[in-house]
Image (cartoon, rainbow, N blue to C red):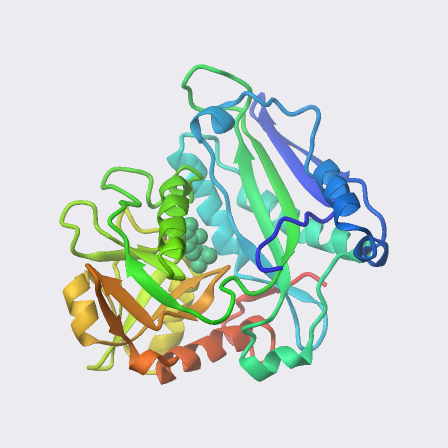
Length: 361
Ligand SMILES: *Cc1c(COP(=O)(O)O)cnc(C)c1O
């Protein structure tokens, strides 16, 4: 399953018009989850397509023509004690508003975002579309765990001239998701593609940033890697991010380093959470520049973080044809400990002492 579009029936749409956000929920065509599971692939694809279509949406718009849009990604996680909880949704609400402002759109109100995100999950669950907790997930620290992925995104109003969006739509859809990186290979390669440039949109969760990401990642996969890592645009020297995730290096000195935020780094909520959890464990965490040379020489462990990726170890990094293995190619002690901590909190196995979870069911 990994990360396949299998939209749940209830979707949300809002539209900014005459200074106000309208709201509506759709119940798209569906059967029961059990009936859908028994359908042929072809029938299911047709049903899925009908859920993904809105016949009153403008096909020609500033998003479809010029990539003017942004999105969020968050998860409703099945809890060990039952129900579903969303991880730090207020952070996503705030970032979504910042992204929209960064694209010169009217920002979507944070309380409306929170409500829409919770409500879609609740209403889908009421139709039987949800993910249940499976205690088998505990055996591999939730590496194979599933959850409900929530995807809020903007769509610009109709138009053909290059323009800003002053009356965007905001949608929220839900889709189930399992592990982001399929097992096996977790080798990464440094790409010569540039994800983000100074004074650009790298700090915004903008759809357009993903064009280069998708190209670079597919090149990496073709060359036999799982992931690619970007260097900075100016010097091609300092580490920036993975293809759609933040990156951390645990150095031999015991220092945990992640690139400092600037306008070319996406301020990940998982990144921020890992920094806090590591500091709680007494680890010396630095948000600073780290060159590719320092990373290759000094790092004992390396991992990437994001809502989809969780905290996923990179077992090697190849730069200009030279492959450097971290921790002899095995998942390191620090990486597995921090991953256990964040996953444990997210799935309700460890106490949520920071109030990071918002229970929806
Ligand atoms: C979404 C995203 C991340 C991770 O952010 P989280 O809030 O942790 O999910 C990292 N890098 C990029 C480029 C992203 O778009």
